[in-house]
Image (cartoon, rainbow, N blue to C red; front, side, top):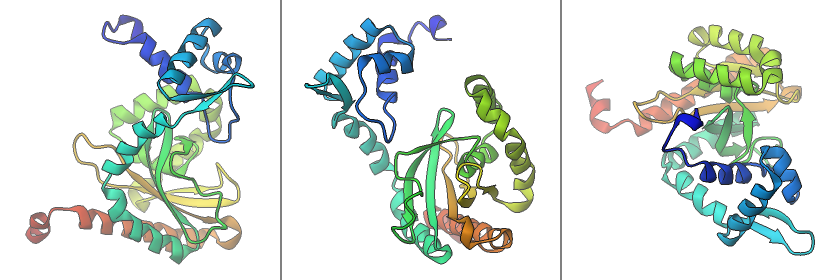
Length: 262
């Protein structure tokens, strides 16, 4: 597709591929590892890492000649989070629900075939497994990702499913049964349930917000340690609780004149 797009800047795309190599928990990476992860020639990677270092997007360790993300990366991501005013409105509602279930409540948006988390509230600091802001989870494996599929238009959903099947066939093979079951049940339940597909110790439900034309799909999930709950708790407390939280958030951001019309 990119070869036929005359406006596609290959050099820029390759530079972004290099930045995308760095994942949470990674140590510093050398040019050889970056080349292996991107599939780019090592000479190309060397020029890209040099350029990104000069611009502040990478930081080079002089002793080892390895790289880690630089502070300039934050200047790209922060405006996105700062402009998502809904996070400030949602946070107290999310915290209240997290406290009620003694778990966590998170919000995420799509990043290609993953979900990236943009907010998380925890009942307590013992719940370190709950996702931090900026962390990713595969769409097909996570409740919040399946919530995104449930809210997407059919053409959007079909395109992403094709991409998942092509790029990560093992993930689709292991997850497609639960994905399809969740999509079938969503109209009746109003939420997507996940019983430990990503992390066996955690059960979760997800509910997408209504989307206005042109807006990102924002999905919320509510998770709790599996050892403390059972399926009935998920069905009678977590699912309805998250539905009510999202409805309250939608009402809070809906223009006042629309509320008066109801």
